[in-house]
Image 1 (spheres, helix red, strand yellow):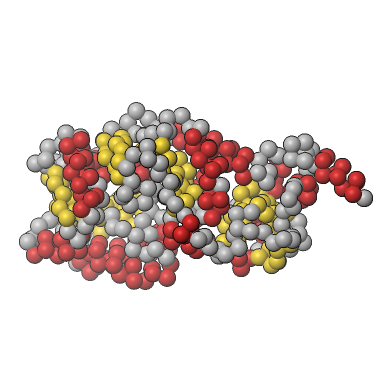
Image 2 (image 1 turned 90 degrees about the vertical axis):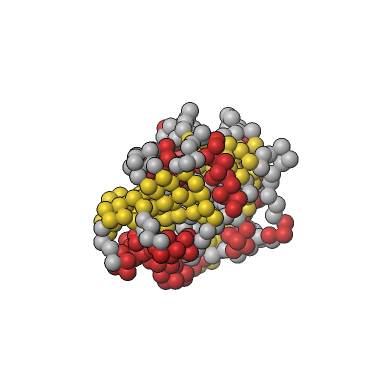
Amino acid sequence: MLQLLSRLMKSLSLSTAPATATLQQLAFAHSPGIAKVVLKKGKTQLFKDGSPMVYSGAVDRIVGRPPPRTGDVVIVADGTEKPIGWGLYNSVSMFCVRLMQLEEEATGNLSCALSVEKLLEKRFEAAIELRKSLGLPSVSTNAYRLINSEGDRLSGLIIDVFGDLAVVASSAAWVEKYKTEIVACICKISGINHISWRPSIEMLKEEGLDISKLQEMQPSACPKRTKVLENGIAYVLSLDGQKTGFYADQRENRQFISTICDGRSVLDLCCYSGGFSLNAVRGGAVDVLGIDTSLPALELARENIALNRLDPARICFLKEDATVFMKRALLRNESWDIVILDPPKLAPKRKALKSASGMYRNLNSLAMRLTKKGGLLMTCSCSGAMTQSGMFINTLQGAASAAGRRATILRRSGAACDHPIDPSYPEGEYLSNILVRVL
């Protein structure tokens, strides 16, 4: 009997498995054995349709001894224990498994089946080719997103590229476990000489990781600051800044601003390092004022003025709270042709949506009152909970009513095209960018 089992395992080894092998057979041949996460009756279709996040409430039982540990490869199966795919397990998170491949895909290309290392290589290759097809990087732009989590089918992994620097934002336990393999994939990319690894601490806490053991990977040779190009405009960015250091998601919206500012005055609220402001001046704006509470961000913004040889008489930056500034500006009877409002995330989770809606309404009401009659307001929300709720437009209508103004929506946008979204996981959509005409 043992000899028969041995021959079967050899015949089904991952390197020589027949094209008709099933995930069940592949898992059986795998050493060590792979546990099976069995879904509850009626919960299978959502994941067969492509949703990558298997939440714990959908799981009926786990088959296999010893039980899987966080980061382990597991089979995901329907109620009859028939495999539907495989993924990476988490014993603590509300997301029990992050699905990596469905059965049909896995058995159609056995080189990646149940192999995180091989799958990473394939997904990186696909992501690089997608960006090339979008013209990234280019002579005028070398700041872009290479991996966008679920959108590139690597849930929990984000990588932004800034020239020869790759910044990794890790928000899943499996990403930390396979750090070496991910870094190896990045090192194969032509032109990248430095890697900065930035764990998302709060998210990784929810993943059950011991935060005290996590370390940011920034070798001594890795620069703390670097320069990038976006649509021909140069930026200094700091790795001590927010998120990965630069908001590449607004690239197309910043470029759009440059097309509508000729001869106009512009107020850029929550301007960070001046992306919208610089584009406004490049587009012919006669007077641009950027407001932010972060002194380090404003120092970068001022460096960017000199870096792009812009006329300092046409653009300046001021450190002040956006709400305080707007209230004082109203008392001075000031107004602008174009107002840009890009506040930080006000609704980090759905439970904060009600209070955040009030904050968005108040901010936008003040911004509309500062917009000249017939002028434009570009307003943004980077809160996924707000964008996914569909409430942002209603919030803007409430803001217009409170301001005693009428608003007409001219343009609706989101993140740039290098931030793909998996339609089976709409929770990946987070950025709203709305252009409003204010009467």
